[in-house]
Length: 118
Image 1 (cartoon, rainbow, N blue to C red):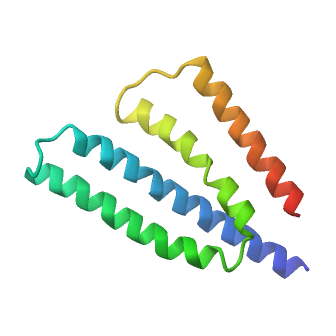
Image 2: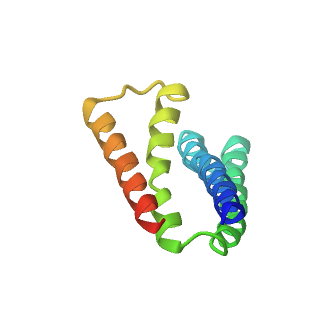
């Protein structure tokens, strides 16, 4: 039983590392939107989106072999939190109370679903 739980933790860590990487597709998307269509930077950012989504699709399918779909899909909501972080760090956006409340609700929801699957 202990081995199964440690394997599960490893897959949750991989899942969240994947969601971290996946969040950069939004960053690349926003960066590409600020560039002239088909310019070098636009193609670079757009290529980054495609590469990130390709890696995401492959690793996501492998994770689903080890974690229930409902749990994995619920954890995708953590990407919202990464979006807030990248908005502040990269794009110098301001964080509102609504954003913080939403992030807390997302975290509570993820915890509830993960605990329910245990």
